[in-house]
Image 1: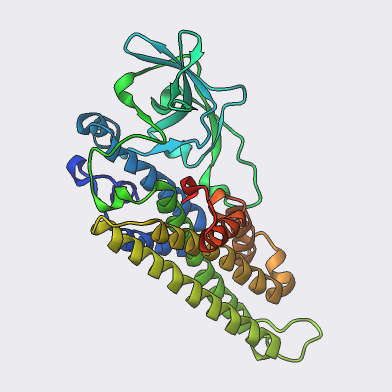
Image 2 (image 1 turned 45 degrees about the vertical axis):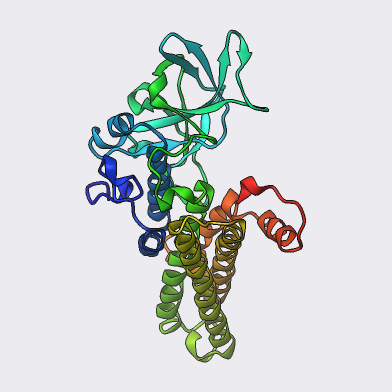
Length: 350
């Protein structure tokens, strides 16, 4: 995938990336997700984190994403590291136990330590909040910790990493929340959290389609114990498949509609809170629908789906890791409900 340029498809053209449109991007991630959820997830995380290149000077962005062969940056969401200001940059140290949820760190060229800034012994503030930056550290200068022991999405390798007193020059850092655009293009006007969410939902729908196809093969071959006919001949199974197909098609249509509308608004520089709320709802609902689809097929498959080497089992485990992720939180329904009811909301979640 790196050789094909997929990890760089969201990076600005000015530094050699694809600067892809969001509807096409979502299609790409969905197709990869059909083949393997963990692979699609890794691609989405690496590609969308690459949009930080649009918020850095071109020359610096090139040193990170263009000058290093097969460059991929693995990040970590919480700013739990400490970066002490020194001449020319920062000395960065992770907290005890390292920084977690660094998807794809074992194939990354860089890790992006996420740190609060300390200057003269005090937390440096940016307005009312502590200043937080991503610090780009060559992966050889970090320790990758073997922590990703999960039931699902094992292939993402979402381990912790640690850095200890590593020097990072100022130019190789970026404000994690408030960095302004250097490359103003439609993709980069859409909040990054919604770009991540769009890809995550696409992975979920991709694996749902494969799960349906896999179940169809099983239903045509398996006669359950104490039952007179193949699975596919049973009315309850037929209803399950019909409902799953309807849920998949409707949820996927909602996702792509929301993606297209947000993209068109961003192209015309009129992206509004309504577009963002719609995309948040479509992505969260998509992940949740995918879980319902896969659960229903898992239940219909019977004991066959209990074995580790069964693909439906893997889909079942994978989707129930995805639903635990920030992008799949049930609380997003409350957020959008508040928005549509005209109540005050935390717009940063959109």
